[in-house]
Amino acid sequence: MAASHRLRVIRRRLLQAVPVLVLATFVVFGLLKLMPGDIAITLAGENATEQRIAEIRALYGLDRPFLVQYGSWLANAVQGDLSKSLATGEKVATSIARAFPNTLLIVVLAMSVALAIGVPLGMLAASRPDGARDRIVTSVASLGIAVPNFWLAMLLVAWLALGTGWFPATGAKPLAEGLGPALHHAILPALALAAGGVAEVSRQLRSSLVEILSSPPVRTLRAKGLSPAAILWKHGLKNAGVNLLTVTTLLFNRLLAATVVVEAVFAIPGMGNLIVNAALTRDLPVVQGVVFVMVLVVITINLTADLLYTVLDPRIK
Amino acid sequence: MVNRFFAFLRRDLRAAVSLAFLLALCVLALCAPLIAPYPVTAQDVDNTLAAPSAAHLLGTDDLGRDVFSRMVHGGAATLYASSLAVGIGLLLGLPVGLLAGYSGGWLDDGISRFIDALLSFPSIVLAIAVTGALGIGLTNGMIAVGIVFSPQIARLVRARALVVRQELYVDAARCFGASTARILWRHVLPNTVQPVIVQVTLLLAAALLAEASLSFLGLGIQPPQPSWGSMLARAYQNMELAPEQMYAPGLAILLTALAFNTLGESLRVALDPTTKR
Image 1: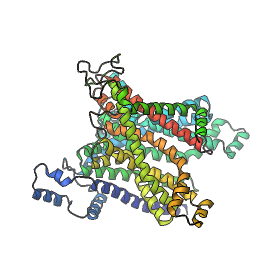
Image 2: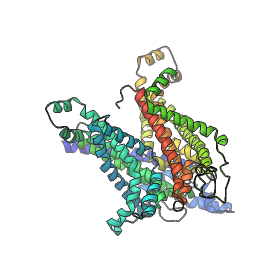
Image 3: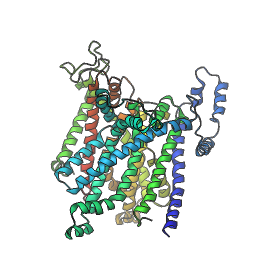
């Protein structure tokens, strides 16, 4: 019964995800196509003949109607063919396959840091609402949300990389070269990214814990003489699980976006550098490809979270 | 209304301080040419990367330009950019949200699906993509950020409109023959104002950070005009020589974003009696 119900949920959510993906890519494709200027003229270079421009148009399929162009792009994209870079001629899928692990490592590490620091802070703040510790945690969280990630990244580079030489200032090492060096390169970017996450996690957890701890069932437990610590761990955290999952999902999506700028500070060859360089040189296939993959990742994460909800909270249908 | 606002400020010291800070910033930005002691491009070539002094309150940058003057002018650019982005977000999001929430049915379904799709974009990535398409520059960058913000406003307004359209007074207005446009304008829109004010305040902080990020990446404001983000980009290039160059613009971004967020949160609590602190 439960298993078949879960399968139904999975199928329904998958079916709902498809139009979102199509719409999202359509919007990007449309926006990029509506741009002023003719990309064929740009590609043909200076003093190109009309004939050369027409050739380029045919080569990239730019002479076809908009919907046909989108349809063939999507059909190819679904099969893993994201076209080629206008600047380097490299397959976009190859560039992304090379860049994505670098980005993922930082994001996952930043997530871990955010949860490892944010969860205890949130519990600390919720243990006595409006107490001194709560005020300090809340203030620190406000700072964490307002601080620009890339400025924090610069401060970390100046203090911990250039100042002390403890960490490398730039670059990334793939996991294939060993966990140690990879983490050594990833830790500063992850810390810079995690600041907002710590703030977000601690704030959300605090507010949901405060609500749970003031609810009638928990008041009963307290009346029965259970220690505050036992209540917080056994009843508070368990019930805050669903909220924590929501925060974690949102956080992942946000970190995925924020890493773009942080990567620039550390010169990490990840998705961020890929799309920024492509945007600066108007290399549209690369821009589209990166956006497509990012949206795909976000949708997958949201889908996974939805499925986890049904496990964590049987009431959710 | 005005009295209630002052009562709110008296009760909430942090909100009052934030508002005062933001107003001071606006004055500084509006009167930038009067306040800044030097033009943004004036160079003191014998005096590059100088420490703060009487002649240069915050020192000079790598081209010998007065950092304080550039901070003041950069503040103007930053505030313009944030307002532009949030303005565009409102312009796009408000009518769409009103329409979806008030009409309901298939139109609401379609628009909501569209909003969901837009919300699944990593925001700054879309802004970068759109800037790449529209062409690099502060105004284009902020149009892109505004587009990214619009679904957030649309979703908020839709949720309010969905509730308001079932109110008795809306039914009454309809019975009296009021047009849809009039109902939306006179009854639904005023009901969405409070949550939208809160959201706009918070979005101004987000727009500020987005502008700083885009300008830092070279996709926003173009030299020689300064914004706080582009000043950080210059400071980044000179980080080994003069790490202290990054402090003033970074702190300015941090404090301004903090002020917008604090004000927004305070307004949220003040305007919504059910919010728990």
